[in-house]
Image (cartoon, rainbow, N blue to C red; front, top):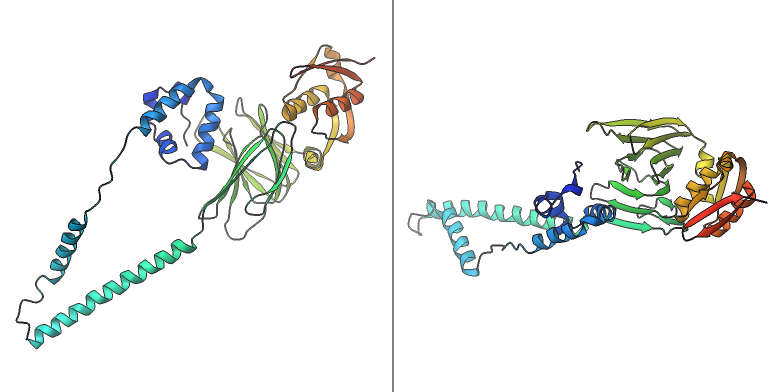
Length: 350
């Protein structure tokens, strides 16, 4: 869908917008996901959106249907047109009888073909693939491991949302808000698996195991096994840049200015969270602050800027309890902390 300045829309603009109309009149998993996310980001437009929804729903269209009498007249006209010019001679004439029989077989064959096609259509409708959808979400301080409907494994990090759909062509698509690790199951044929993030970055799976993190100002994609291609959006044009990743490579995309970089990645460290570990390599308090904000929504405030220069390396358990994590960070960095509401204040330890 093309980018539109919905934040500037009036009630009239929303009513005339085709994608908005589709959501109101024919909601599905994709457009519902988009508009719910958009309204969360623009709560000031809720009244305008609701007015537009009410207006669209107040418009009713009557569907025209034939009455029983009209249907009878229509069929009579069809049969009269089929018989026109065929049986004008006396009924006793053998030639006329043969002519009528010849044409009767034609119509009978046509009826049989139509009946056969109708039966085939009914069978296809009965056995056709039903589109599937599945969604999951995690609260702050929660991690979830689950199987997608296609038997692929996903590990969803804290404060994340995921929507999975599969259509009649067996195209598998995932919309991700947050961080998730995927182990994709190949189902054979051309069954594609694509992950979309809300900064319009798309990851198409040619491999199996990879991690996507769209928290904060950057989106990072790390490939562990197989091969993936990425469509990286450009803020200056409608064209996208396609990149291919090999195992051990990473793409980091800046949501603010659209810049990106492809580098080698410490895959084990970046995916250790899926096994409940935090691997630290020159890890700083600024890194710890980013992690606490991502996992628990807690903001760290460091009064002494010198503390931000501390770096540590090593490993420790990754706990999804904020107090436990801060206790561990306190021991590692030699600092003390106290919490007020959702803010954690850091000071040098004694």
